[in-house]
Length: 175
Image (cartoon, rainbow, N blue to C red):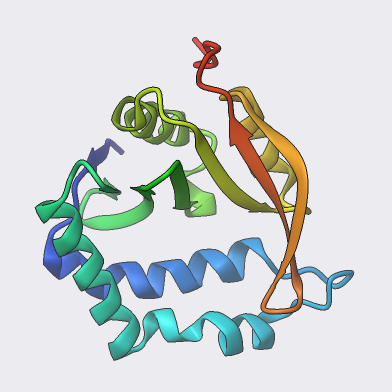
């Protein structure tokens, strides 16, 4: 199946909230961290509610109005959205959220998403948070020159994240 990377439409907000929850349920359960499906629904279930969907619609519309400050792309497989990548520009470029359903991983789609994001970000310093036990994501970001800073956070008191930054003075795009 062909995967198309494009800017989302306002109507895609109804899909992005539930998709974000679905990806969290695929990615983040971790017995060692005490994170289970119930905790994910409690902490992130709002992304699939009317309010969460309205937040996505607002972000999509803001990204259309301010494409130099806000970035958002979706990945379509036929009529289904299977991933998305967003970011924002302020004193640095913040990457995230970036999610791709497990079924769409390992096909070069994440690389296409990242190349388009990096083209948008240009030479600005970049940063992101990534969950410390999501080793696949950490390796992915490292391939693009992101490095852990040692800064850590517990999102909502439980999800262990690490800060990664990218030095834009060096070339990091994998071939």
